[in-house]
Length: 231
Image (cartoon, rainbow, N blue to C red; front, side):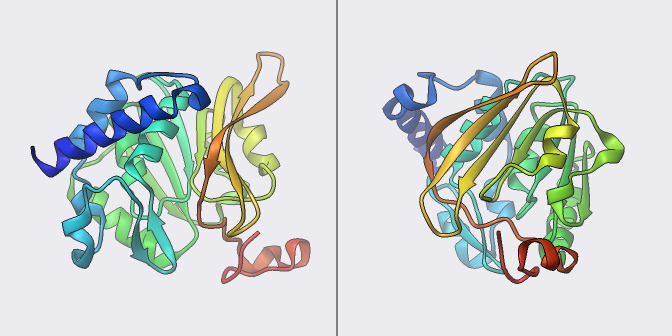
């Protein structure tokens, strides 16, 4: 069995194991096909490429990681989007999650605050021909209002609260998925749904461990942290 096929098998096994928490016994074939099509090895540092298809997170530099493939697949599936959807991602990281999303939806807008990662991800995605992904280096807490509303929003770093601007930029009927919790403490993956009248509900999916959401210098007065720290 190839490394990639083993990764797919590991994802399916973990989905089955967590089915009572995540509310599904299998992920959509569209999502699993996207996982098959995206070359994960292209998004990890050369020193980590032998582990590219292991079902676990890997370091990508700047104190950040590429998420576990199971989590990438699950978060994508939880959005329940189709080929006409426009999605916002907060936390580009390596660009892998954006690449997976791009195989499922019409357009992906992705934000990364760390300039080194933003530039590297944009270069990787461009080199692989992903022409429906637009990257921007900016504090993702405030979203990207110019392209709102979004059919779905994904946040790939943990915070203690859902950023209000992201709720505002989610269209009625849309979904947002993100980890909530304190940095390096217990966190939960949370699914947020915005009903047609604009009301919001949320539910916990399962426990997770994510790097913290990094903020810009401009937010020091509000949160007491700078871009080298996190909320």
